[in-house]
Image (cartoon, rainbow, N blue to C red; front, top):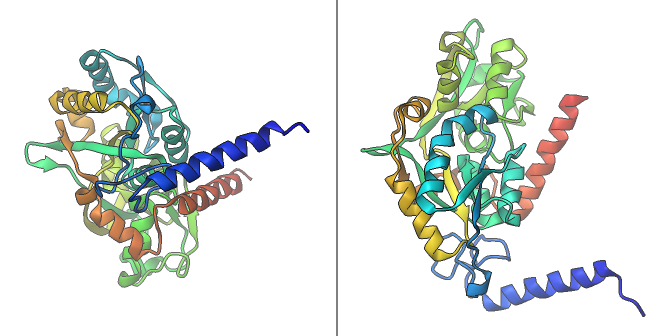
Length: 335
């Protein structure tokens, strides 16, 4: 009897997953493909050195936080320096969404790249991502705030004024664009999905431009993206009023694949630490002039607490659920 190839593949995948589970002493919140035996909350390198990757070409991706072409242009000096410093070719791998970036990291199509704050936590648990640097200066990391913005000419003054209004969140996996509002707004008298129907815009610049055009009455956004758009002349700060600000969160930053060879991982860390932003990057990142090393367990603690407070988690089931919600929202917007 001939066994169907798909059946064989399913058995092999099950066997691989079962073997991984049996050999892993500690996993925490990580997907079954990964181990965390040193309890630092990120995936350990594969135990078998034969599974370590040392590619001639590093695929670098910028998760589309705002305009992908502009952000790629902004980070190009770093990508060029990384190629020179590591001796590797560095090529861009374009993605159309944050979910696509996380899937690319999980599948090995992306080795290193930038991810938003919330997407970084999903990348850690779902794709074995290793956050290692975020933007900063001599004083340390440069944080960002969640701002609730409305049009300057609107009558809205407080969060409670937005009950029943058109409020745009960005994507389900976004910290400032979704999870933090769900955790923090109810105490201020505004509960998403109860006091207003959440409308997903897809990304922060869509939310900002939607408020400016009147498509949305308000939007929770990452303040640094609004500042970047204003600096480029896309919008004017005077067109908006900020009616609520959060404490500072760690900004999105650089993550790499857990299965890169340890020596290559260290080389990437060293090169990143040595890189000094050129003037265009300093301006684009509101005064940040370097990449600052980070520890996911420590620096993302507030993000994990916000997610827990909003009833969310950063596991595979949550990722698949939220990705489907975002896809459904995108289809509904097209129709």
